[in-house]
Length: 231
Image (cartoon, helix red, strand yellow):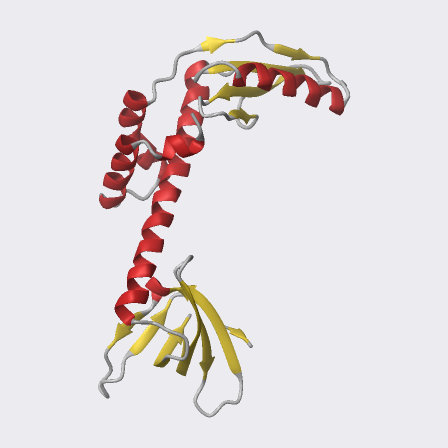
Protein backbone atom coordinates (compact mmCIF):
# COMPACT_ATOMS: atom_id res chain seq x y z
CA UNK A 1 0.00 0.00 0.00
CA UNK A 2 1.32 3.45 -0.90
CA UNK A 3 0.98 6.78 0.90
CA UNK A 4 -1.73 7.69 -1.60
CA UNK A 5 -3.63 4.59 -0.50
CA UNK A 6 -3.27 5.69 3.11
CA UNK A 7 -4.78 9.06 2.25
CA UNK A 8 -7.63 7.37 0.39
CA UNK A 9 -8.81 5.61 3.56
CA UNK A 10 -12.29 7.10 3.97
CA UNK A 11 -12.64 6.12 7.62
CA UNK A 12 -9.41 7.90 8.51
CA UNK A 13 -10.30 11.00 6.52
CA UNK A 14 -13.68 11.07 8.24
CA UNK A 15 -12.18 11.02 11.74
CA UNK A 16 -9.61 13.69 10.81
CA UNK A 17 -12.41 15.86 9.39
CA UNK A 18 -14.51 15.33 12.53
CA UNK A 19 -11.59 16.20 14.80
CA UNK A 20 -10.88 19.37 12.83
CA UNK A 21 -14.57 20.31 13.00
CA UNK A 22 -14.42 19.80 16.77
CA UNK A 23 -11.64 22.42 16.77
CA UNK A 24 -9.11 20.19 18.50
CA UNK A 25 -5.94 22.21 18.11
CA UNK A 26 -3.06 20.64 20.02
CA UNK A 27 -1.46 17.77 18.12
CA UNK A 28 -1.19 15.39 21.08
CA UNK A 29 -4.90 15.75 21.77
CA UNK A 30 -5.64 15.52 18.06
CA UNK A 31 -3.72 12.23 17.82
CA UNK A 32 -5.48 10.79 20.86
CA UNK A 33 -8.85 11.60 19.31
CA UNK A 34 -7.95 9.90 16.01
CA UNK A 35 -6.06 6.91 17.42
CA UNK A 36 -9.01 4.49 17.96
CA UNK A 37 -10.07 4.85 14.33
CA UNK A 38 -6.44 4.35 13.24
CA UNK A 39 -6.07 1.16 15.26
CA UNK A 40 -9.33 -0.20 13.83
CA UNK A 41 -8.55 0.64 10.21
CA UNK A 42 -4.79 0.00 10.21
CA UNK A 43 -3.84 -2.48 12.92
CA UNK A 44 -0.13 -2.95 13.56
CA UNK A 45 1.13 -6.50 14.03
CA UNK A 46 4.54 -6.86 15.60
CA UNK A 47 7.18 -8.65 13.55
CA UNK A 48 10.48 -8.19 15.36
CA UNK A 49 13.73 -8.58 13.46
CA UNK A 50 17.10 -9.10 15.17
CA UNK A 51 18.85 -6.00 16.48
CA UNK A 52 21.67 -4.55 14.42
CA UNK A 53 24.67 -4.12 16.71
CA UNK A 54 27.22 -1.49 15.69
CA UNK A 55 30.49 -0.98 17.53
CA UNK A 56 31.71 2.44 18.61
CA UNK A 57 33.84 4.15 16.00
CA UNK A 58 32.47 2.20 13.03
CA UNK A 59 32.93 4.11 9.77
CA UNK A 60 29.94 6.22 8.73
CA UNK A 61 29.67 4.63 5.29
CA UNK A 62 29.61 1.18 6.90
CA UNK A 63 26.91 2.31 9.33
CA UNK A 64 24.76 3.61 6.46
CA UNK A 65 25.25 0.46 4.39
CA UNK A 66 24.23 -1.81 7.25
CA UNK A 67 21.17 0.30 8.10
CA UNK A 68 20.22 0.42 4.41
CA UNK A 69 20.22 -3.35 4.15
CA UNK A 70 18.10 -3.64 7.28
CA UNK A 71 15.60 -1.15 5.89
CA UNK A 72 15.29 -3.23 2.72
CA UNK A 73 14.56 -6.31 4.82
CA UNK A 74 11.87 -4.51 6.82
CA UNK A 75 10.32 -2.99 3.69
CA UNK A 76 9.74 -6.49 2.33
CA UNK A 77 7.69 -7.38 5.42
CA UNK A 78 4.32 -6.07 6.58
CA UNK A 79 3.12 -3.19 8.70
CA UNK A 80 4.76 -3.48 12.09
CA UNK A 81 8.02 -5.10 10.95
CA UNK A 82 10.65 -3.44 13.11
CA UNK A 83 14.16 -3.62 14.46
CA UNK A 84 16.60 -1.71 16.62
CA UNK A 85 19.98 -0.40 15.61
CA UNK A 86 22.10 -0.38 18.76
CA UNK A 87 25.25 1.64 18.38
CA UNK A 88 27.79 1.64 21.21
CA UNK A 89 28.85 5.01 22.58
CA UNK A 90 32.57 5.65 23.09
CA UNK A 91 31.92 6.57 26.72
CA UNK A 92 29.68 3.57 27.41
CA UNK A 93 26.03 2.90 26.92
CA UNK A 94 24.12 2.70 23.67
CA UNK A 95 22.54 4.98 21.11
CA UNK A 96 19.29 3.69 19.56
CA UNK A 97 17.80 4.01 16.11
CA UNK A 98 14.31 2.50 15.71
CA UNK A 99 13.18 1.29 12.30
CA UNK A 100 9.59 0.27 11.55
CA UNK A 101 7.74 -0.41 8.31
CA UNK A 102 4.40 1.39 8.01
CA UNK A 103 3.01 -1.01 5.40
CA UNK A 104 2.86 1.75 2.78
CA UNK A 105 6.41 1.38 1.53
CA UNK A 106 8.17 3.62 4.04
CA UNK A 107 10.47 2.52 6.83
CA UNK A 108 10.39 5.13 9.59
CA UNK A 109 13.58 5.81 11.49
CA UNK A 110 13.74 7.68 14.80
CA UNK A 111 16.73 8.40 17.01
CA UNK A 112 15.48 11.15 19.30
CA UNK A 113 14.29 10.77 22.85
CA UNK A 114 15.25 7.15 23.50
CA UNK A 115 16.81 7.12 26.94
CA UNK A 116 16.29 3.38 27.33
CA UNK A 117 15.69 0.42 25.04
CA UNK A 118 12.60 1.42 22.99
CA UNK A 119 9.52 -0.77 23.22
CA UNK A 120 7.34 -1.82 20.31
CA UNK A 121 4.43 0.18 21.74
CA UNK A 122 6.48 3.36 21.92
CA UNK A 123 7.77 2.90 18.37
CA UNK A 124 4.23 2.33 17.06
CA UNK A 125 2.99 5.41 18.93
CA UNK A 126 5.52 7.57 17.12
CA UNK A 127 4.80 6.06 13.72
CA UNK A 128 1.02 6.41 14.05
CA UNK A 129 1.43 9.89 15.49
CA UNK A 130 3.34 10.94 12.38
CA UNK A 131 0.69 9.39 10.13
CA UNK A 132 -2.04 11.34 11.89
CA UNK A 133 0.05 14.53 11.75
CA UNK A 134 0.63 14.11 8.02
CA UNK A 135 -3.00 13.22 7.30
CA UNK A 136 -4.19 16.24 9.29
CA UNK A 137 -2.04 18.63 7.28
CA UNK A 138 -3.19 17.11 3.98
CA UNK A 139 -6.84 17.61 4.96
CA UNK A 140 -6.14 21.15 6.21
CA UNK A 141 -4.42 21.95 2.91
CA UNK A 142 -7.37 20.51 0.97
CA UNK A 143 -9.77 22.65 2.99
CA UNK A 144 -7.68 25.78 2.52
CA UNK A 145 -7.50 25.21 -1.23
CA UNK A 146 -11.27 24.64 -1.44
CA UNK A 147 -11.93 27.81 0.56
CA UNK A 148 -9.64 29.84 -1.70
CA UNK A 149 -11.22 28.40 -4.85
CA UNK A 150 -14.63 29.33 -3.48
CA UNK A 151 -13.39 32.85 -2.68
CA UNK A 152 -12.04 33.31 -6.21
CA UNK A 153 -15.41 32.24 -7.60
CA UNK A 154 -17.61 34.22 -5.19
CA UNK A 155 -15.55 37.43 -5.51
CA UNK A 156 -15.15 36.86 -9.26
CA UNK A 157 -11.49 37.71 -8.95
CA UNK A 158 -9.75 38.30 -12.26
CA UNK A 159 -6.65 40.04 -13.54
CA UNK A 160 -7.07 43.81 -13.53
CA UNK A 161 -9.75 43.92 -10.83
CA UNK A 162 -9.29 46.88 -8.50
CA UNK A 163 -9.85 46.54 -4.75
CA UNK A 164 -10.03 49.51 -2.40
CA UNK A 165 -8.79 50.02 1.15
CA UNK A 166 -6.73 46.87 1.43
CA UNK A 167 -5.09 46.25 4.79
CA UNK A 168 -2.11 43.90 4.76
CA UNK A 169 -0.44 43.02 8.07
CA UNK A 170 -1.73 46.19 9.71
CA UNK A 171 -0.88 48.56 6.83
CA UNK A 172 -3.69 50.03 4.74
CA UNK A 173 -3.25 50.50 1.00
CA UNK A 174 -5.64 52.70 -0.93
CA UNK A 175 -5.84 50.36 -3.89
CA UNK A 176 -4.91 46.84 -4.87
CA UNK A 177 -4.97 45.60 -8.41
CA UNK A 178 -5.16 41.88 -9.06
CA UNK A 179 -2.04 41.06 -11.03
CA UNK A 180 -2.59 37.32 -11.33
CA UNK A 181 -4.92 34.57 -10.15
CA UNK A 182 -3.52 31.10 -9.45
CA UNK A 183 -6.42 28.60 -9.50
CA UNK A 184 -4.11 25.63 -8.91
CA UNK A 185 -3.04 27.01 -5.52
CA UNK A 186 -5.96 29.32 -4.80
CA UNK A 187 -3.63 32.32 -4.44
CA UNK A 188 -3.86 35.82 -5.89
CA UNK A 189 -1.08 38.33 -6.45
CA UNK A 190 -1.92 41.96 -5.65
CA UNK A 191 -0.19 45.17 -6.71
CA UNK A 192 -0.65 47.54 -3.78
CA UNK A 193 -0.40 51.34 -3.58
CA UNK A 194 -0.66 53.85 -0.75
CA UNK A 195 -2.50 57.09 -1.26
CA UNK A 196 -0.11 59.81 -2.40
CA UNK A 197 2.92 57.49 -2.59
CA UNK A 198 4.72 56.51 -5.81
CA UNK A 199 5.88 53.21 -4.28
CA UNK A 200 4.34 49.93 -5.36
CA UNK A 201 4.09 46.82 -3.22
CA UNK A 202 3.27 43.23 -4.04
CA UNK A 203 1.61 40.51 -1.99
CA UNK A 204 0.68 36.96 -2.96
CA UNK A 205 -1.88 35.46 -0.59
CA UNK A 206 -4.56 32.75 -0.56
CA UNK A 207 -7.83 34.16 -1.86
CA UNK A 208 -9.58 32.87 1.25
CA UNK A 209 -7.65 35.46 3.27
CA UNK A 210 -9.40 38.30 1.46
CA UNK A 211 -12.28 39.40 3.65
CA UNK A 212 -14.48 42.45 3.16
CA UNK A 213 -15.32 44.81 6.01
CA UNK A 214 -17.82 47.67 5.42
CA UNK A 215 -16.78 51.25 6.17
CA UNK A 216 -18.99 54.30 6.86
CA UNK A 217 -18.35 55.40 3.26
CA UNK A 218 -19.68 52.03 2.08
CA UNK A 219 -16.42 51.14 0.39
CA UNK A 220 -15.12 47.76 1.51
CA UNK A 221 -11.93 47.33 3.47
CA UNK A 222 -10.19 44.15 2.39
CA UNK A 223 -8.28 42.43 5.19
CA UNK A 224 -5.31 40.33 4.17
CA UNK A 225 -3.49 38.17 6.71
CA UNK A 226 -0.15 38.37 4.98
CA UNK A 227 2.80 40.62 4.26
CA UNK A 228 3.57 43.01 1.44
CA UNK A 229 6.93 43.64 -0.13
CA UNK A 230 8.18 46.53 -2.23
CA UNK A 231 7.79 45.81 -5.92
